[in-house]
Amino acid sequence: MTADESLLVTATDRSIELVNAAAQAAADRLAHDIIAYDVSDVLSITDAFLLASAPNDRQVKSIVDEIEERLNKDLGAKPVRREGDRDARWILLDYVDIVVHVQHSEERVFYALERLWKDCPELPLPEDARKTHGKGAEHAALTGVDLSDHAAGLPDAVDGELS
Image (cartoon, rainbow, N blue to C red; front, side, top):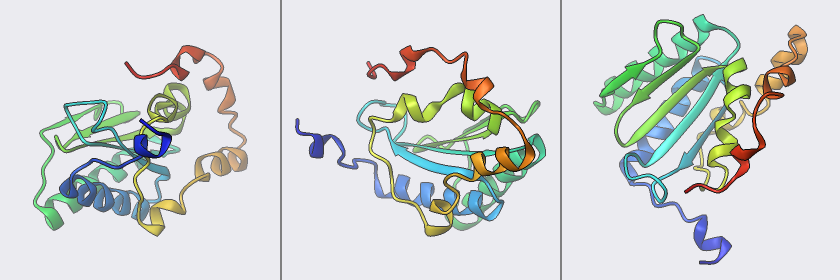
């Protein structure tokens, strides 16, 4: 398989539609660093992951609520599972076709899901979502939060290939 072939998107049209709607909803609620990956070639349980973050627990919950409301209203989609509400540090919405992860910025840096899924093709997102790239670091710099301390404990083994 060539490098170009490994970057082909194989997610379904429905999955891409859900990802785009969720990404726009997250951007509308000022989420940071929105990114989506087509994981359909490496996972049989879902087609895509959408990742987004926010600097506080209240905003994490607000982003998740907006995504859930928008996908239900506009596309008739309801999550089969919603996890992480109690602490609102990392909330997961499982729509079967896609899984949405909205994390507090500290969890986003610590768990580094982008490093885990970096070999999967990135899905194109709406312009508003693309504009959020780098917002997490920008916010951390403005507020004096050093997120690098949270990443220091992350093992290098995360960079390994997916099995």
